[in-house]
Length: 182
Ligand SMILES: CC(C)(COP(=O)(O)OP(=O)(O)OC[C@H]1O[C@@H](n2cnc3c(N)ncnc32)[C@H](O)[C@@H]1OP(=O)(O)O)[C@@H](O)C(=O)NCCC(=O)NCCS
Image 1 (cartoon, rainbow, N blue to C red):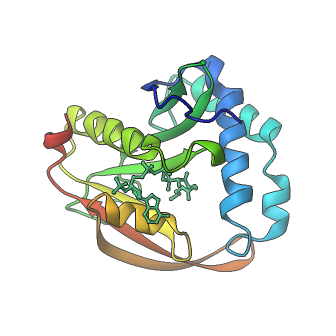
Image 2 (image 1 turned 120 degrees about the vertical axis):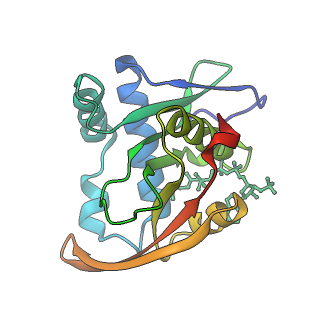
């Protein structure tokens, strides 16, 4: 997987041709981050090929089922991270009308500011689309919650559900005043 290397990373809207690279980053991130949090059989199914095909469908669909998708591209042209955002999905968080649906940085590119760049690009997009505030859901045990706290997010909600045949605990972080990112 490409590292952010020189530190020169461009964040831009994803294109259909990025689907394979997005699938690679996503499957790599799930397999490095979610053991113990998500059942192994789910992680085993999370292959670059399967995820790439899924993103090919999403990015080729004019209805934009995954909202706006951004990629972070290193200076050598390799995709090192991606994220997606759009209207808040549960429609139960009145104040937080926007949502970041996904945010993943490849293992080798972490800790170099890529996640922050992607997050701010998505906040800017949400603001330009008329959203005032944003929410992000994260698994309780995911260290990414410390990243969201470092990014100024505050705990706004918690929920418990069953997914993949197992109990899932999640928390949502929120950001107000998205116009400062636009
Ligand atoms: C969470 C994630 C997106 C962060 O991206 P990143 O590129 O590594 O983060 P950045 O380098 O932009 O970090 C920005 C700041 O957050 C802090 N930070 C990042 N990850 C952190 C962590 N796990 N714990 C504490 N602080 C963290 C950094 O120290 C940095 O602070 P600084 O600006 O004071 O130096 C990335 O680690 C990732 O993809 N994780 C796996 C997938 C995942 O869990 N995604 C979230 C799903 S909800």
